[in-house]
Image 1 (cartoon, rainbow, N blue to C red):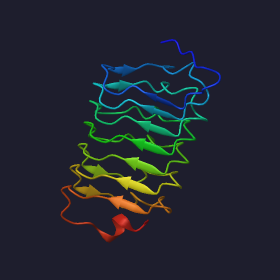
Image 2: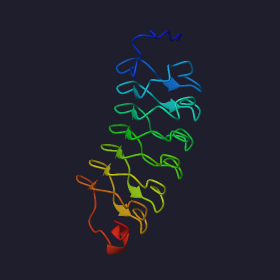
Image 3: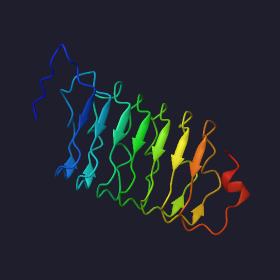
Image 4: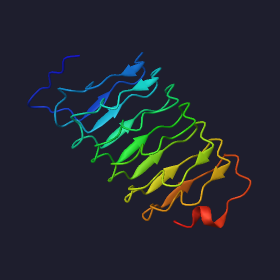
Length: 178
């Protein structure tokens, strides 16, 4: 699409929810004004996001909502470079796994929601380099296993929500990094 912002009223939010967007191609948001800090893609039949979809928004995007879609897997490079991102909402998707390195580069991320997906295992190192993460939500997944070292890098975490999962036992070593 062609974006023509008004110079006297800069846009800060782009809401694309409740459309029929199936994929987000490379450079999908090229040409957006540098004032865009929030993008909402929730409630779309989204099945794919290009690793270069958010190129050009590295310094400005602080909030991204990709909830309530059909995403099963997200390519490990999709969020790379989004150094200003503080809030990432991936809840109510069909995600069954988190690729290694998916959150690498999100050094300012504070709020990550993965509620109501199909995740079953939290792997060691999944959250490395998320030094500023304050809230992490896994409510309503299928988590049965938390590997030792899963939370090693989350020194600022205030809230970890693991409610409504399938945990029967949590080893002390699995949460030692908190």
